Structures are given as C-alpha cells and as structure tokens.
Length: 202
Image (cartoon, rainbow, N blue to C red; front, side, top):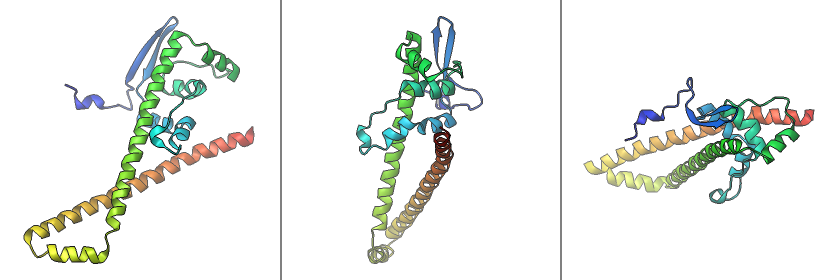
C-alpha cells in the first residue's frame, strides 16, 4: 500500500528520480521542487502550447536546446560547459548517445506531467468560475422568494444556512484564484523584462 508521506518532496534534500549510468559516470535526475515546477511552467514551449485555442488537442514539443540549456542544469547534476556554442549544442542534440537520449526522455516525461498539471488546474478553475457565474445569475427577487418560503420550516432554515456556507466557500475560492493569478503575473514580469532586455542588447 502506498504511504501518503511518500509524496513529501523535501526542498532541502532533493529526491532522486532516476540515475543514468554512462561510460564516464552516473548522471542523477532529481524530482522537481515546487520552484522548479514554476520555472518549467514558464518555459516558452509550455506557454506556447498552453495558449493554443484548443487546450484538449495541444501538443507539447520541447526542443533539444531547451532541454540542454534549461532542464539539464535545473534537474540533473550533469555539467555543461558554459562556453559551449549553439553550434556545438546542436551537434550533440542531433547526434546523441544512448545515455543522453535516456536522460532527455526522462526530462521530457517530467515536463509532460507538469504540462498535464497546468491543464488540469486550468480546467478546475474554469469550472469553478462557471459555478460562480451561475450563482450570480440568480436574481435578487427569486432568491428573496426562496428564502421567504424556506425560512418557514426548520428544514428550510437548515438548507438556507447550508447555502450560505457554500456561498462563503465559493467567494473564498474565487478570491484564492484571483490571488494566484496575480502572483503568477507578478512572477512572469521579471522574466518578460529580462527577455526584452536581452533582445534589446542583441
């Protein structure tokens, strides 16, 4: 039986996801931390795929350069020469060893799982918003009539009390969603400014 505490991802002690043995030594691939997940969600390929019109049919395509420049330093202990040129990277990507192919396969799987999480979160938030919108569509007069009728019995008063509790929950959840969206926008701004600066410098 799976133990719930096995899902704890200690930020101070990285969990090993996979170890790939190579002729020159072992390469460790780590379970992404919460911060790692947030960084991966902001990868260009992730954002582009997520912003397509039909989320259900989106295909995520992580190219080799992204894996080499972003994911390997983030999730593995594999060292990459900082002076390596784009041409040298392209040569390695186009002609990988079996071991490198295994590493990229594991990393691609991690990214796919995170992308699936993004879509599920989006759908859950959308369903919650729809429920809130439907609740707000109830006219004040209809609600007043319902309350007046139900408050005449003990059972009706209990139902009204339960409705009030659920309404409070919906308001709190909607507030949490807005706060999460604002936080995500705030986190995304530094990266956008950095990319703009790099383009201007180039």
